Image (cartoon, rainbow, N blue to C red; front, side, top):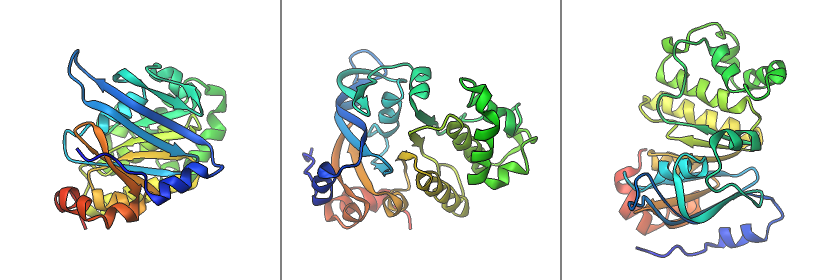
Length: 257
């Protein structure tokens, strides 16, 4: 396994004045006792950054997001949010602290309307419904015209939009996105990536796991390549796209034009 080297961009980042939002420090984690999916995995995300995580199937990409969000047991290492420890904190506590999570599948309540799905995202702060609903609709105006529609009748791309919007209802500082383009047509994939950029431009630090490696690296500020549960390579999206090792080992099979 190649040991990650600090790129010039990352070295510059450590000296910047922007807040360090999420710090994953040498985390080992897994679903079953004695079986680790993550092995001394590390990641940093600074305020306003869009971080992309790519790698082969089974590399631990989704597990990393779930470990951050308290859905997978962290056995070693630590995770912090603005310097405060959040390792193994329960998901509801993390939501209250400003962390949102959008899973890849089963990410809407199909029998509820779009508005009811959004209301579920704000169950901890129901008095802020009007202002948060207006905010979300300003980012995704098409939702405002269809609030009464059942989520179960939506396409995969539309469901993804509702799931992102529900996570935004609590005004998160950071949002974790697991495969936002999974299962979508090429056109819908482009729309999904545009939505991710809109969320990030709105000031939300974004950490995204994505199988469409090339497209992910095109839009992210920095990227991490995971392999066998650890961060094998890291750098800016452009640096990783032009790294011969990354191209040969990962983009050749994972990249999509």
